[in-house]
Image 1 (tube, rainbow, N blue to C red):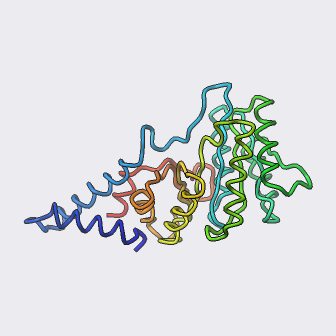
Image 2: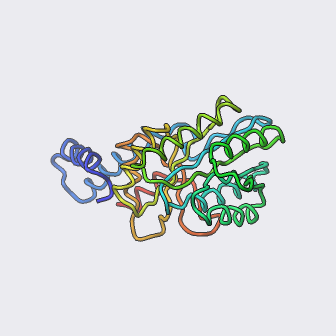
Length: 259
């Protein structure tokens, strides 16, 4: 039910075309497996689970977006911690100026991850925070800056426009930024996550998806829909609260768990 009608139709068509004459459970399973992996391989390029990092000495900017409650701030903390463990000098920018606790939550995660946080007091314009963060990170020789943004529904046009503005403003400091636009989706939100992916991608040209709460009740079938319907690669999955619970996405393991 999480796959979305377009993806389901494609899988059924494949079964009708390729499973003729042998309707054994094993053959149907193998046919589905092959098609699902084909869907993933069509959107995963090169090292499919790696987010882009520029050459040493060149700043990398990641912008993280998504709806309220998808797990953006927690995901940023885990990403920052993993980058720090790789020896990268990391800054997180507290661009979520709407949610009262967002700043405090990001501070806790930045301390846990042992990275710097950029959170100027009394600045409520997320574009200004993003601009200054990229400026400071560039001047002080940081390797990566991760920009948090306020959660918003994909239907809130004015807030979607604000995201576009944040992206434009960063490009005034660094013409190639952001190098990744990472969409965080809750695996439990089913087909609604597909709609979110379409809308956010349309507005901001998403480069990769992180699926959170894969340890919940859903099997996260939306991952296939995101790849098939929206053409976006799923790069990582969240399977718990700990730092190491943000893992590279493995299409093989994922398809095996579904079938």
